[in-house]
Length: 291
Image 1: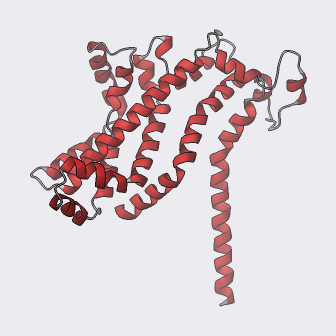
Image 2: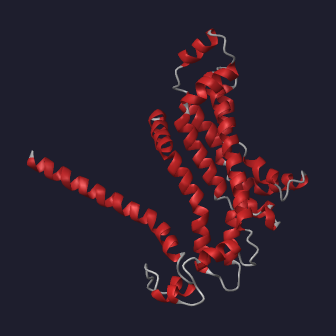
């Protein structure tokens, strides 16, 4: 018995060490970004890297505590376009998240709870689109967007991502085990199908909806490739494009770039903080139902 307890303790210690290392490697880039946002380029590029900003940075007459953040907001041209790009990213990410949740849940509900000819074929066809990398359809999608005069517009940034195949899969798998008796009882009471969806199904899908919403928001918030193609005007650029501008200069200001990246990360941290309870619950329920 003592040997078993000893082995179990050693196993637990190994697991804790492994998880601690994973946590360390996960948060290390975030800590680096936070620390570097208060340094100048010379300190950031110094080897070995110092995790504590030197006193010279704060005692210099031409720098203040928030110098990098001021540069990040004003931009390379001092035009303060940061707030416009932040607004653009919020509009795109929020709109895509809402449409993805609505359309994916509606489609997933139909595929999970309605039996009709071709149900399985339609589901497999939707899943097959997940196997196609975005780079393979990027140029044709760009040509369609250009021909429809959607360049440099919110339509061009939003419409190609209105619905997600993964979202349909996630909602369908979640709704497969939703009790059909509730739906049948609602039909007996005279509720229409859309009312059943809106008043019965959606309120009971909060965890998976929060999970899908967070993932959709993050995907669009971090999207760099597509806005790079369709947004040539400064007023239609998004946060990822704004951050890359700092690396395009002849003398890159790494400190301002880190400050900009930190500011751009705040909305994601806030969103996850508000919805983390539902996000973690949705992920756990989804894994259990998938298994």
